[in-house]
Image 1: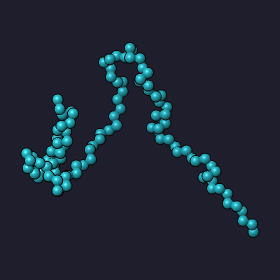
Image 2 (image 1 turned 45 degrees about the horizontal axis):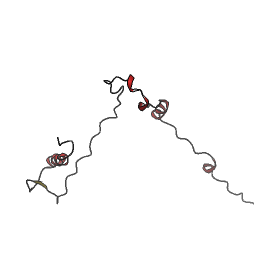
Image 3 (image 1 turned 60 degrees about the vertical axis):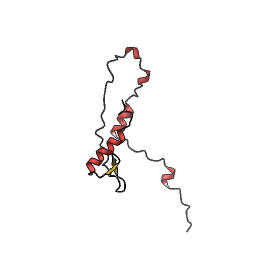
Image 4 (image 1 turned 180 degrees about the horizontal axis):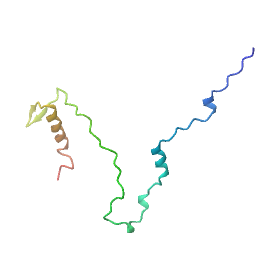
Length: 104
């Protein structure tokens, strides 16, 4: 018996299969791209800021991770132990205390 040479696998010779697009992907492709920067400002009403608004849902912050036991909050130079809820608020306040939004 003669052995036949192995042919290349079908996946190597055939083109890769295209993944089916979801309905949202198809809809996005069908919509023309809005080029706001090409719009004429003379015709635009300055009181209208937008025509549509899309909302992607509510985003919640990750749960608070308490400070390690060897790090203490200082209040008037003295270390203070706080319950986790109070510590979270104190850390939030401290982060935003000297931010540009808080200084006015």
